[in-house]
Image (tube, rainbow, N blue to C red; front, top):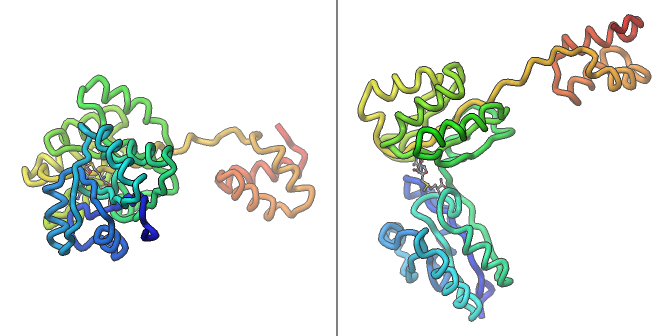
Length: 284
Ligand code: SAM
């Protein structure tokens, strides 16, 4: 038996440009016994392009449970399986999580073969901090539910990432502006890695007029990155007294302020003025 027998490989495939697939992904797809694909016709075209003749079987949201059970039996008998979705990374707003969960529970080795995802593709060119980001995926279709979800995200100090279908992109942008406020910036990623790739940065107030100015801008696949909420103003100077006093016992004023800035993420001015007050014994 080969080293990969009884293994489930979760393989990322391109989100548009066919060459965005790793050498390891191609090797894996070539060498497994079976490829479980969200849409066998769609993945069949990719396999044909790369001359891969591995048999394909369907695993999509409507048959995930029964298809997973069959695949687990096959892997338990020694077959190796690669899971792919229509585009990007399986299980990211796509089927796959159930198969992975059940494979793990059955003691089957699960191996990720990483690659593209629309989420990371847009974040990498958004210019927004992705130190923290919140991937929401698709917002609810109904206006009320969508607004409630957005209310829940409004205070997050993290870049927000959404997927959206072309026929809902205008409603989605209108709701984002209404609930999160027009001043926040957004990066609209359309048809990433494809012929009509567009990356447009604007404010939420400017997003709908931009997309409505040209019907071509409303076509294709969309991913949106919205700037996170700004930090609440840190105006209480006594908040860091304990830290500053401990640092000032051992360090110069400048060093104490520098370390307090690193620890708290607070601005220099506020910390410096407070440290000065503390050293002069004018605590108020
Ligand atoms: N698993 C995929 C991934 O890793 O990104 C996502 C699958 S989800 C069903 C499909 C959605 O991803 C599309 O409706 C769109 O919002 C986004 N998407 C996929 N490919 C894209 C592309 N090339 N450009 C922009 N958005 C894309």
